[in-house]
Each structure stands twice: as structure tokens, then as C-alpha cells.
Image 1 (cartoon, rainbow, N blue to C red):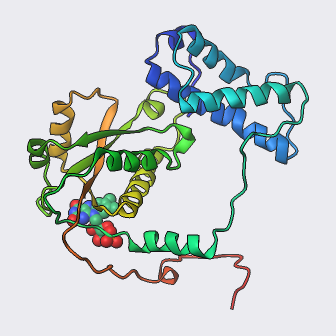
Image 2: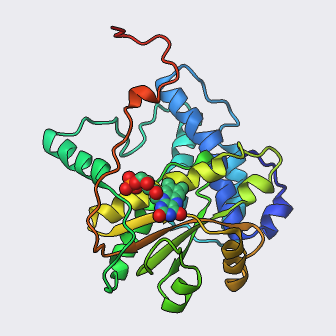
Image 3: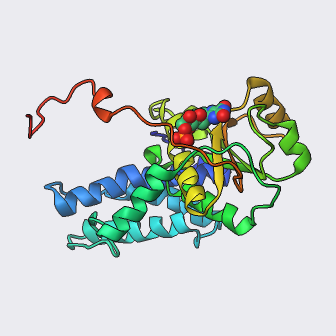
Length: 280
Ligand SMILES: Cc1cc2nc3c(=O)[nH]c(=O)nc-3n(C[C@H](O)[C@H](O)[C@H](O)COP(=O)(O)O)c2cc1C
């Protein structure tokens, strides 16, 4: 996404969209450059951080909250950017390299990764909200194109609504997490990010949620609504046109034991691997 909104436009913009715009501009015009300056040979110029600063000025002028996690991250980066602009060598606080897991940690990770299944028959038992919140939090930590975080959720526990939007292949689940997208970061900007990212973001978010549900002992199944259900949900919740309903995760306490559907070997999925180092 690249958008060049005027100050006047930003002063009137819906705060959710402004927040998205701010995150994206900080990501592309500050974060990337800062790391390239620290670890690469890029130099930061006298205007470094000014694009993001202009948006942050509007954020402050509108007295929008500064203690939100992503906005605090923005402030941290803006402070580092300012110090780097003045020639200081900066170190981002709490930054880290990937770390190989210990054997026990790796076993736990593989248990989760290979053990996650789709479950479709559930006990008649509620899922505590605390567990649903853990699943949602995991979804938020998925990678997201341009750092836009376009996913939005409808969490449905009302039995009547669960029946209304049921999947005929399943029993009625205890909770349905519907994943929607806020498409303004794509549709209302001058240079939109790749269109496919909209759905890729949802996929990443859904996989995080499905894995976390499994880690919490819940049985989940990822599924997709019919076009008629999507329209009905959109109308029922009176969603604005910039919110699109995409897919959902059904959750409950599984009462069926399922066998893993064996996967084909990754070798059968590789189309090409030019330059492979240890070719046999
Ligand atoms: C995008 C997507 C849509 C799916 N839709 C359905 C569905 O409509 N009904 C269903 O029973 N399962 C659905 N599933 C679950 C798949 O059938 C399941 O993931 C696959 O058979 C592999 O089984 P596993 O999840 O246990 O590894 C869907 C999964 C994905 C990722």
C-alpha cells in the first residue's frame, strides 16, 4: 500500500483506517530503512521519518489513544528514527535473532504442528471465553501484508445464529470465529498492495488460530461460507461495505477421534529447486 493522504483527509479519516495507514507507513518508510541502516549499508537522510511523523502528528492532534500496542511500537520506532537521523548508532530494544528450539521444545512444536486435525463432531459443552481470546490473540500475531492487520472477527456463540449459519457437514459447534477483512488498505489507496495478500493474510491468521485451538485441547474445523450465508451475515451485522466476510473456524470440545489424513511427500510437491546445495 502506498497512500498519500492530505492532512485534511487524515483529520477526517476513520481512526481505524488512519491507524492502518500509520502502521503501513511506519513499516515501509521507517522500519525497513532503519534495519538497513543498522545492518546494511543504507544511510538515513535528513527527511527520515517525516512521512510517518506527519501521520502521527494528525493522530496526536485528534487526541487518539497512544497506549495501544501498535501505536507504542510506532513511538519506539519514531524515537529510534529521530536518533538515527541525528547520526546516532541505535539498537532497537528487545530485538532478537531466530533461535533454534531445544529438543523438548521442538518435540512440543512438532506435536502441535503434525497433530492438529479438523474435527466436526463436538460435545455439548461451552468453550470458556478465555480460551477463545487466546485463539484470537494468536490470530493477531500472524504475518500480515504491509503490516496492515486487515483481519476482523465476528465471534458467534448464540445457538440460533450457529444454526442459522451452520455447515451441513458438521454438528453445531460451540463457537464460530468468523474471519473478515477490512479492505480499505487495499481498495482506498493510490498504490494498493498485491490483491492476493488480502486472502493470504486471512490464511496466516486462520492457521495461527487453528494451531492454538489444538494446543488448548479444542477441536476445530476451518471452513468457508456459501455466498448466500456471506450475504446474510453481512446484512445481519450491518457491516459496512469495506468489511468482507471470508471464512470461519468452528471450535468445540471434540468427541470424535480422527486419523491424520496422510500427506504426500513434500518431494512430490516441489516443482523446481535450482541451486540446491547438497544435490545427491
Ligand atoms: C480453506 C479451507 C476450507 C475448508 N472447508 C471445509 C469444509 O467446508 N468442510 C469440512 O468438513 N472441512 C473443511 N476444511 C478442512 C479440510 O477438509 C481439512 O483441513 C483437510 O481434509 C485435512 O485434514 P486435517 O485438517 O485434519 O489435517 C477446510 C480447510 C480449509 C483450509
